[in-house]
Image (cartoon, rainbow, N blue to C red; front, side, top):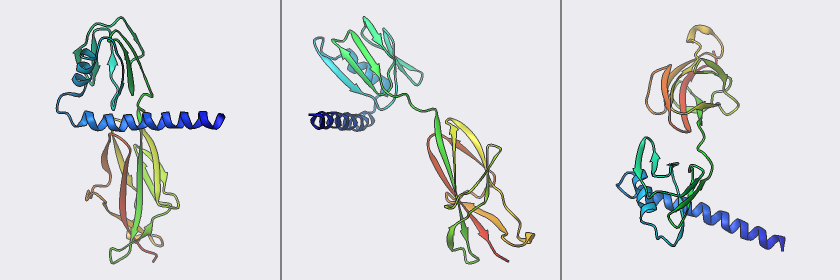
Length: 206
């Protein structure tokens, strides 16, 4: 019996996930402003129906309007609103809205990978124990040449690959460029969402 219930729950979760993916594709296929489409759907839903709306982006539901990213559109006046709206809306007879889901995270992951080049310019693998400075803080690349830092979205951060000049002796290296062609070091990075950058360095042993 418990197995059957677990299978039902799993099926519901998969169905809900499918709704979210499908709804995102449908919303993105339209040319009208996103919040206007949601408001239009609320305004023209059947008066005797209960509808479920999966949302690809969060909206704010008020008694007479719906807003998203600073744009608001009028909706049929509601009798009650429960919640704001993150990933879904349930509308009862165009009069009551239950809104909820998981709010989007204000944070994103910035991943910086550092890789070594030999004298021919051939990638010879990750650069370990290299200092990477991000927003004034110093981090050390791990065994895969990676630094992972969680930062607040919507800000610009300075990223710098610390380098040891060629005349510094054993283990010397110097910065070459980033994988997107940028040659600035430090460089400024605007973090909109999770992001990965790869830096290449020239490295010698003697």
